Length: 279
Image (cartoon, rainbow, N blue to C red; front, side):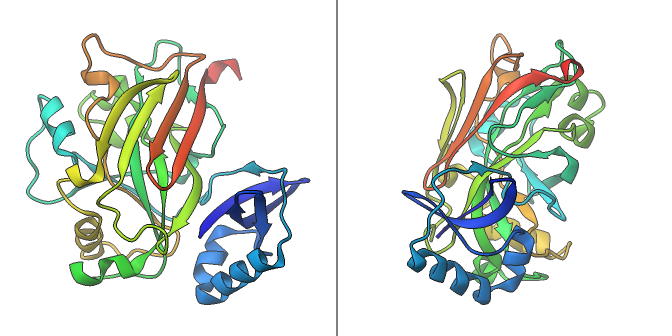
């Protein structure tokens, strides 16, 4: 099942994405849907069977205000190898983004200034489905509600000043999320998915989640031993080689660019690039 948060006729809803459009579930908030568990899923299946479809809608960020957005740093072998300062981690490394940085499909990534050195990063993201603490690796996927896509947009000129990761990656609009959540009934093995990014249609990154240093299960297990996870929390699983800052010459986003990040079995998340002061 594929869930979408959408707007139609001025109303926000949660629907099941079908080839012909969206089947409304009656829910208007994704977190409420996730917390309702099997009750909400049963209602979603009923919505599909009712065969009432909205063909005209606009997709929104599936979880617009996550309680936590946690990113795994240096979690692809190829990204480790392209980064001259990186050290092979013994344990998963994490940093956080703020909910205020989240935007949805089609919304603009806003550069702080025209000269900002802003980068793209395609990432598979995990949406947590239930309260999780000290879970074992064998049971870790039981905590997953579904999967979506994140573009870990990064202001390198700020990030690389004294390793200001949270500040450099936490600007408003620097966490495009979506376009939908694909539930675990459709993605049984998150370790076998191709990921890619494109700038103006030209491919910049291409890899597979099998290149991860730490699997989805290992990331969840490590985090849950230190931080209690709650429904709607997002865990982003890292990016492969090909980011702009390690290219020769470096490639940074500029006004007018269109960035696309894609994950197999989920879809494509597309965002234009603008400049903040020109709002």
